[in-house]
Image (cartoon, rainbow, N blue to C red; front, top):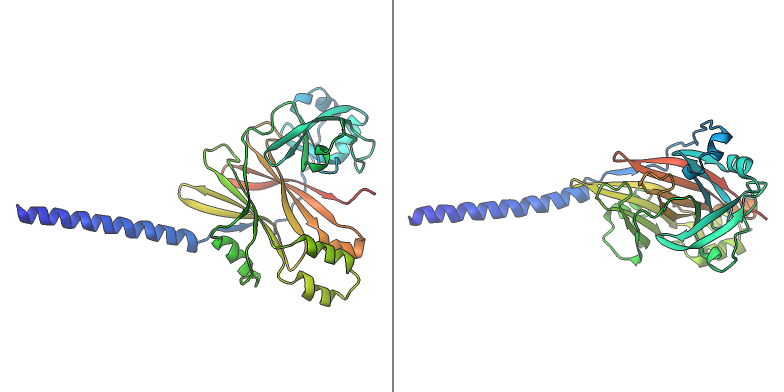
Length: 316
């Protein structure tokens, strides 16, 4: 009897230790077998799909128009197809639209404005108030684009092994990791939370110094200001115990900044697209101003794909 009890206890102890070792090994494997997918190196061009203007005019409930923080047209979607700013101006020049303005996950209000005669011109939104100047994106559509509300956390301190690995690969491994934003959202409505990290060590002082001293020699400037500066946007998905990390925007030894500007359902399919703004601050010495690129990503069938892109310059 005693022998049976002893054997049973021994088996239980072995099971417990085996389970603990397995859990520890699984955690270790997740950290060391990193699956990092860099989407910044993939060539992208917007698909030019021919859509009859009358079809769009007769189906405005399927239309979404996007405007940026300066109230200029980025582009839009019609029945899940991207339409560029030229097409929107061509069809809707002089027509009035209502725009919902947002910061990430925050509805600021609804405003009205007329589509201008040129895509470079901004839309004069009314009523005019300070919220217009605080928004990151304006969306005109008949559905609610915030089908799920993102959770936004600022100035987060976390164990950032994946981010450190990415920086180390660019010989930036010994610098401080500064996570400006952590955004939690189920992008594709599969019940799993996705996490977006906005990471950068670029400060306002860096940009100001850059603008004021852009005449100094490039070699000296790179050493004094740009060296070890970085800006990174990382999208993380964890599903069935597997972690994938997607690099959506990345600049290093540079003052170029990558920012998340919206997370919203902009084609009415209950999947939330992710929009980022890649600001090329390094263009200031040559151009006299910063330029940039808006990029829109979509998560479907466990894949992250870029679905649209728009280059921008300031309108003076």
